[in-house]
Image 1 (cartoon, rainbow, N blue to C red):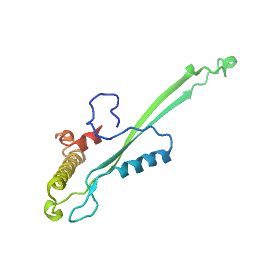
Image 2: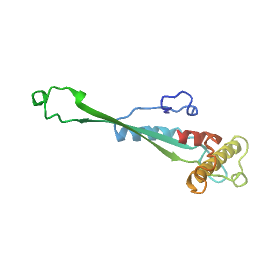
Image 3: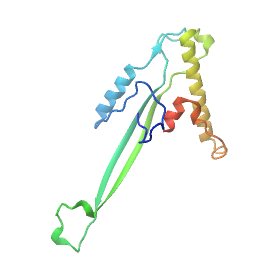
Length: 159
């Protein structure tokens, strides 16, 4: 979980963790561990119905130093002084999302907790669709409210 240094800028996700990795294999191991924690449950339509969305956020940071040539000072060409360089910092954030499927309560014959889960899944998917519609329609861009706050899923993806 990354909040970009700002407290309270993203919703709390119980059980979420932030892991620093250095290789693609380490990142894939984190993904596999996360998928093993995914909640599933039986419905009339699916014996192992996904009861949750899964999000893996990868933050890639890169620092690059460009050394400036100083032809006037050849005596100190290799003095180890990095002050004559320009440093740039790049940070990219990618969300990999596996959404739980939309369900019709009547067809799944869900009741109790399974019904409540299905309602929450459908609500999150509806809000996500509304956000995509508000952002993707050139006629609406800048003229309509983007409902990020209407769902924990869309608040997470916005961050």
